[in-house]
Length: 287
Image (cartoon, one colour):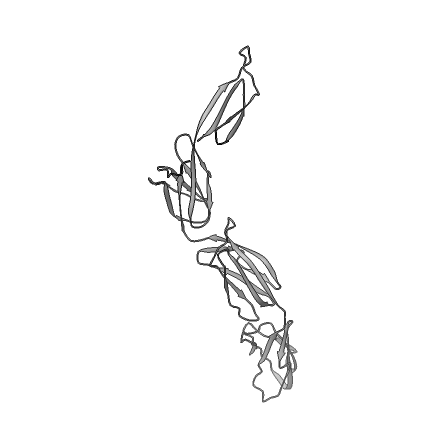
């Protein structure tokens, strides 16, 4: 049996042999090695980044086994990073685990900004994120020295819910607005805002685009919102618009083309159009 100082089996250790039927053997995944000696002999372990206790061991016909202790002498380092969703928002509560042949490391949990850090790894370490509600890209990261700014992308895997409201320019809720939901592969059933202007939708998966719609001369800001996980703060602001039009002619009544016309309201919103055969039409936001 061949073990590291904390009891973790040490695989891939080369055992140089004298007096045996083989010149060397390699420890297996459980840290075990086996050799047949003709009489007396020695076994000397070696692996880059380790020192051993004892450094070597002698055998004779009466020996029944040999256990070595390996101690890693590689320098310790620190790693850190962040877990983010597709919109760059940090994901809290993600478990970051660290796999190593040398020793077992305690996992860490991402904070409210999705950040994590781990001091003390030695040698090659595999960093693995996990959370029951998310899948990750990449699924793991290999490191063997200090690194900062490791970014792992999280995508919501479980069904989630979203909610929000639609407001008019006075800040009051607007009833009867249709809220539509679509992903790359699926169009969900729409919902309609209630009398207070509120809406909600459950059962979404993956990345979904949410967009409001209402009949008549209305606009929405923003025109759509993309989500990939639960949210409850989505607000669409509705505005009204109307068309303005007219004709520009010269003193003889002939239409003038290429004249720029600017239409604005008292809020300073401006729309510029150019006449075509003297005619112009502009859609402006109603206050």
